[in-house]
Image (tube, rainbow, N blue to C red; front, side):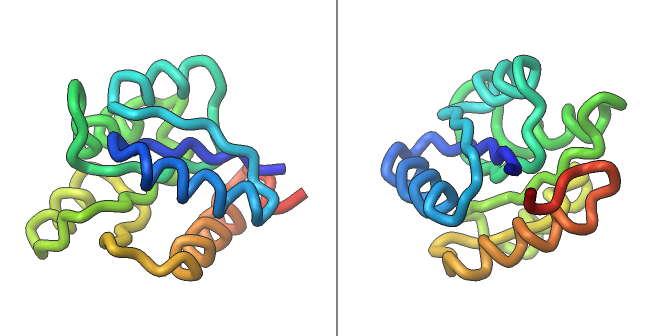
Length: 129
């Protein structure tokens, strides 16, 4: 079973995404800011990360850049799930190494499709056990 780390400072969104993913058979980990996310990743490497941009302590762009700059985590797909919908924000996400960019409000099916797509194409990671 694939494990997904969900990172968002909005507790309602965090709970909604967590429930939706668990209902589709995924294990989930959660964090409410970038620092907690990095700590979670140190403890247990998830198969994929769903990451908000605007968060306290360390923002999502910085978290993504750190993960993609580290040999032990750069293989983990990062999907930005964010209210930042400007073209420049999407370009910053790409520059940081994000593997996907999903604007809020988001389609649940799009999120599920993107997760499945990245799990299946990521080398060395289990797709759906």
